[in-house]
Image 1 (cartoon, one colour):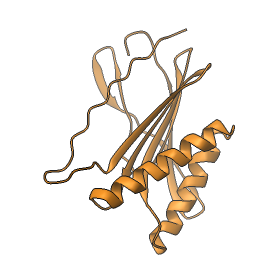
Image 2 (cartoon, rainbow, N blue to C red):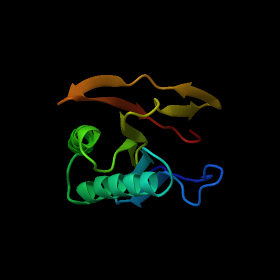
Image 3 (cartoon, rainbow, N blue to C red):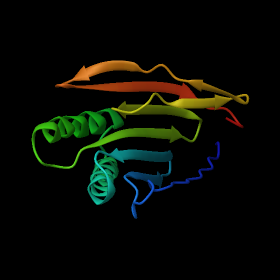
Length: 146
């Protein structure tokens, strides 16, 4: 079993009282789930968008959906948000299993970065289309110290 440490630091945009980014972390018996959302817009609207999206992802995970199903479902609703006045957020979600294996899905987000042997590397996800949206999927294995 491997152990995971996490640390979060955020800074609001100059002149704003809330942040448009939101992060959730959930520890499970099999590993950890991280959800990172970036609400589109600024101030309160972006904050609400990010919190809504992250909370939805976490709740779908708790209900037993696979990470792929969750990502595709939420990306589909983001397609609706492009046309309707509902919250929109870019997101990245990663599951880290206790053995070090991980899977990430990204929507409208930068590629994941992995730090191994003191070197930071940008991962090249496999992109695929689901409905009208494009998701990036990355897989890998973490070792001690990564």
